[in-house]
Length: 403
Image (cartoon, rainbow, N blue to C red; front, top):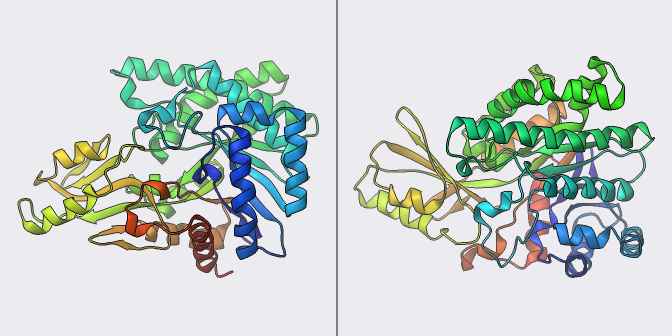
């Protein structure tokens, strides 16, 4: 929905369905109910998630026209897509496979270009659109610095193939489209520093001559194209896991002249850890243990007395639970926004409140997307009916924005 602070929606990766037919049925079931609760008299924006299979099926003209007719009939529009998960995302073991295929592959390029062509066909006139994507690759697949450098170089060159297409779409009179890179723990790009370093040390040096040659533009024009078409997806959960303060992230992005294409509004689990060996600490660890499920990665970043310790998933953190150096855990688990405490655990909701307050004063993006996708794997006492959960999430964001 349109607000004074941007288009607000939720990501449909919450709904199962890897084929277009199955996912469309989910949209038809849930979207009208959510719209009726939150935006009954105004158009309602959709943050669309399409698997590779669904994107191929929706690319058929009959399916696309049927979807466009449904959007018009329901008073809805699509302005952003989630192009991070390529394959199955429900009822399968996802874990690190969420990065497959990564940006070193042609499959990721083809899939992402297809999403952008669909978005260009669906986007209302005069509106910009974005597709969020994985942070190039997964660090733990690479054993040494040389491998990581090679993967980053290959991924960057492939990403530029998409940027070229986005620039051509715009030059031909189409909309402004941007690919929104989403850093996350153990991604090749994990935080704002790694994103900015990559942008100026790899993307710009490779991208400026590439676009100058392909499009016949000056180096200055090529640099501006890169900044328009490659933007940051600021997932609040991921940046909170890295213990990054929202204001510092936004200031750094602004100082470097870089744009934020999408704000993904999400919360992580966190807790201070009492003294090692104590019953109080054991109780906190047991509370985390209830969230140890086998579907998604739940990376943990621990704050220690002299820095941070990274665990690739919750089981590794649990195995090191009595490490006396560890003072706090933050775990990658997109918990509901409207709940602040989960027994002995709390959430990084304060980071969301800070980001939204900053959005009110400086409007750093026009795309706001709630991304709580772990409803199916939450402990039973935290589950609510899907439509109520989604509406409550969005209503909570509206309340923070004083709408």
